[in-house]
Amino acid sequence: MGNQIFKKYRQPRRTMSITKAQGIIKELNIQNINDLNLKLIAAYYNILVVPRILTGMDGSLLRNNNEAIITVNKSIREIGRTRFVIAHELGHYFLHPDTRQFDIFKERDIYQWAYKNNPEELEANIFAAELLMPDSLFEPCIRGEEPNFNLVSNLANQFHTTFTATAIRLVKLIKEPCALVASENLRRKWFIINDLFEFRLKEDESIHESTCATEIHAGETSASRDDKISAGAWLQDFDDSLKDCITEDSIALGNYGLILSLLWIKDTIQKE
Image 1: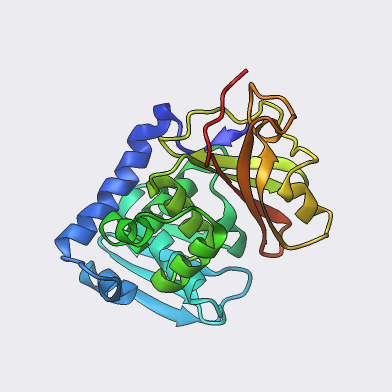
Image 2 (image 1 turned 60 degrees about the vertical axis):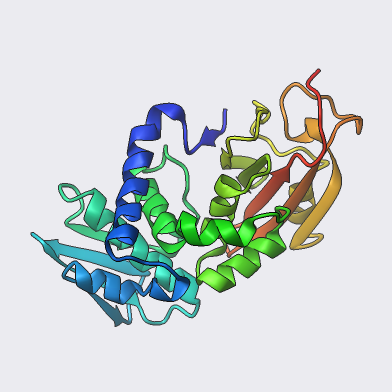
């Protein structure tokens, strides 16, 4: 079955990442988005952030005892990507003192949210998302909103964050039953669900032909949304009829052939 990145038996490691980021927010009394200055946050903990032209990487962390240097590629154009690199390396600094004396961050790491690939990389990503989009600042922005990628884009611009990390925060914090699926070459790579999502994704990791994701993979469009996707196209215990439908919002990401699909249970559906 496809890898869900927040399994219950991995909860302690996930909780560690979240708790550490929340502790920094509390210690520094961060109360608005403008307070989320990563260079100043790093400096408070004796960590120097240095922009430099890098080849083959977006950033790196070099640590010696309680001091560290985070180098970030100054040729990165997207502010969200730059900030995520810094926050990710801060995550390694705080979470992995014994195993991450030197770390390299590459562009594709932004899209890696599967626990099985590298647990420590995922933990640093979780830390970064929590630090950049604290619950206290993020939740008021999504209260009463319907989940969609236009909302994700607006939030990413507001918080200066990457699209993927923002989509994950939306799914985890919104008071709607949602799932987020990443696929590549019509195969599911990873997925997350929130606490309100009471359904199982299909055991078959292949992406169904009737989904918006398949339409994007075929090159027909770079983004697609449909409020009448058969629940059986994505969910276990449903058939392929249109008796039970869900909303799918899918979009192509980056240059790696990845597709993100936001699934929303807008209306009541019943398992067979």
